[in-house]
Image (cartoon, rainbow, N blue to C red):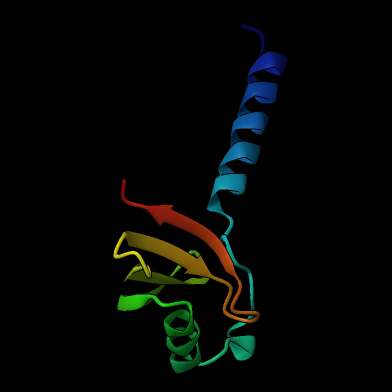
Length: 89
């Protein structure tokens, strides 16, 4: 493999690594809503919140939904929109 091809491969690998390193939510800390508001919003949805932490720039909630199913949800800290949900099947 020649030097130019090696550089092209290296550059594409670095670019893909940067994409994976980005946070799911990118909100400055000064714009985050209070954790109590997140819990209240989730309870209004009928969720029983077991744990709430921060991950990938979002709030991450471990909860039981209204049907008793375990879920992991990522919540935008500014808008409180649920941006990703994983359910245990």
